[in-house]
Image (cartoon, rainbow, N blue to C red; front, side, top):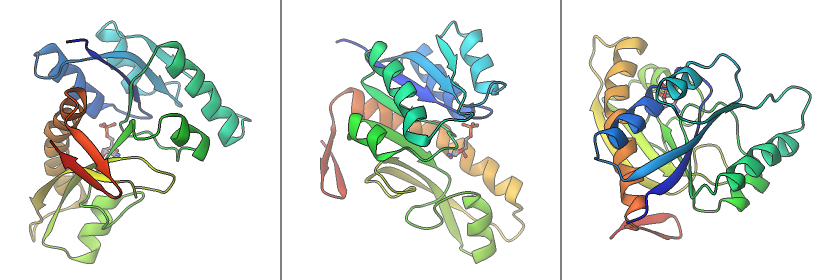
Length: 201
Ligand code: GRF
């Protein structure tokens, strides 16, 4: 079976990128990262890609309109024949143009149980709200912010003693398992989107 050609877009440390790389290298995930793209020149994610011999690209957003910037990314994605785009801590909202170009072929991971606490600092939002259970979500990306159809979720208990750091780190452990699983389901053609629902075949 051909390996799924994926691109990972990341702005920061790239621990989810690393989890995807590890899942591929261990044979658990039948995919190939054909390009890692970052909007931050010094993103640690780019260093991780380099270490693993993966193509990588910094595309500067400076002085560019959102759609103009997204066009540059999309051109690269087409050039590399990307089949699935994985956002992993990519700190930009994609333009409708980008979403349309890769309709139902963009995934994101979010550190809460969506639709609760979308946007930035989800773990802190959950903690401040006082929920007893939080977790993480892998979803398809639509035009909204963290609003697309949900693929997989995993719950994490919130402890009375939790700080933002301790909760984030337990959630992150789950993220590292959940994201490769979701990609793997996509790679094997087992995800079917019906409106807001994602059916796992
Ligand atoms: C993760 O918490 C992810 O859920 C969120 O951004 C963070 C990225 O972390 N979207 P990393 O760069 O993958 O380590």
